Length: 352
Image (cartoon, rainbow, N blue to C red; front, side, top):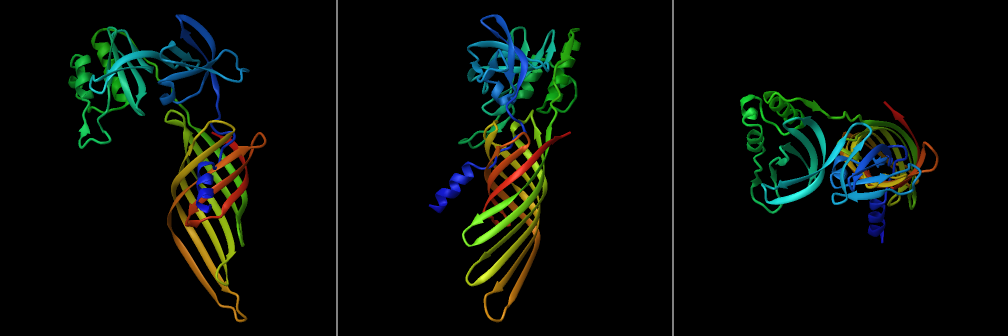
């Protein structure tokens, strides 16, 4: 029963109120060759590669989900353009259709960015044809790294410009945009870099609470700085700050007191983007850990242990907002020791 309870807590822990909640941006879609204006959900690139969540009025409770068989392109107000692209992937073994973000538009050669099987890849568009640029990777079940030869594809499509540039080939936006731009210049054609700068979202969080455990008591306080990077994922954040935990309990005729002062650094993954979101986290913390023991005898003996060090940190929880900037949370945490089940209340504010 105890293990079931811990699993339940682990799968349903901590949420975050004002962080990256589900938002919609003004935009439009092209459906049945008609342009429809409305609002598009702010998803990350991996989600937008296969579908778009669209509603005509911001007040609508739900949005319509359109896939690659229903929409030919869509655009959001910040300037991002997503076109439906049919391209052969996995060394031309498979033809796939997906939405790709146009990051460089050239009269002779254009460049798209998208996600295929959770991996970022790029698409060259030239004379109505599309060419995939995939990075080499180790495939599960295979003994060797699968080669996709993006160097050769890039050089072939750019008619040797990639090799003649004498730049070190690397699999990233800046390099590909530079080569595609050079190719358009080589052909006497114009081009435009359409990349949109994605700013990170940062939050300062204050929370405090109590721990629940039979025969013991616990309390804690915490200040955390949380940083999201939307162009990577709207569900993953980096967190660091300072925490204090005090845990007192009885064990084998001893009164035990634990005090933990820590500086945690962790990555957190939220499963959902709503006002109530479960999450898991993992990282490490720099700790000052003080444990004292007092025996319940007529003559008292004390043993004191202090520990400075680096410890692994992991756990899970759920957080539910109750007011505009206030939330309540439940958390299971392993940091220097297994903490009692923690219940708390917090305050969050957005910072630059």
